[in-house]
Amino acid sequence: SKDKAMINASEVREHMSVVGSDGEHVGTVDHCESDRIKLAKNDPTAGGQHHYLMLGDIDRVDGNQLCLKYSAKEAMQRWQAA
Image 1: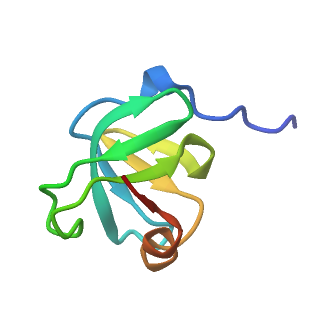
Image 2 (image 1 turned 30 degrees about the vertical axis):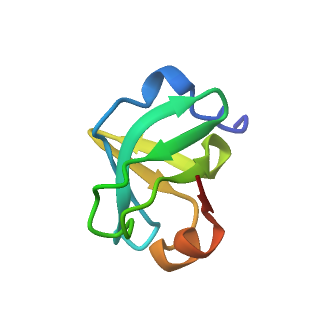
């Protein structure tokens, strides 16, 4: 079986919820900017700041959720403050 293609930016929609591989909440999508996803700063986990995650960090789209390749805790260590 061939490797699954990277998630397409067009699959990422505003207000989608982002969860870690452990199912824990990471944030809410504000919008997508080319190869990275900007998370809303009004999300409880965001601490009033926008953060970015890379599109390549997304493992799959599950309904209205973006599931990451690693845990929520690790995501919060990796994300970049805007």
